[in-house]
Image (cartoon, rainbow, N blue to C red; front, side, top):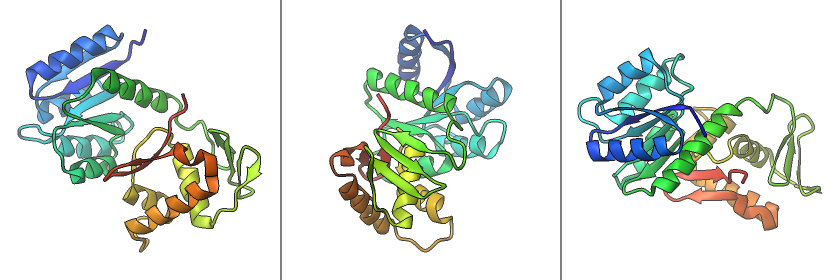
Length: 231
């Protein structure tokens, strides 16, 4: 049983109570609030291990809460999972680019949400397990940054420089949804003139070279990509 503390931020009391019930049943400690302003105060006074954050809040909206917390070094590392009823992808993309860890859309399955919570907490706990220059290994794919070599089940992959960097970045962030802009920034820097469409082309090429392992790179429709989390 887990004992991590989770903050639920949603202006709808029935949703707060539903989440509280299921999270506590799963062994988590839970705090709840209904506004962005209160959420920021609670997090600053008693930082939780993870935040479930509704984007559609009165007053200070969820995106502003995310922006404020991620801009503060004291709270920047707290994983945020966005909860949204919106169908527009732009809000989800912006939240991810502000630093949110993941998202779920209303109506959501509590089983799926709990799985996302556990995954985000595992990811938080294993951060920095891949020191700079060390090999990265997942799903039978091995990346050696120092030698600039990549293998899939001992078969060497012939990757371009950009493909190598994209695959490395995805492997370092298993289970995390990454927007195309985030991938561009991580690989080329914020001001590099690369179109989002070019990322799609690079991903297609990487998948072809991974052959039977192509499905480890998942497409998140309208958002970007993620490396499948290890089971």
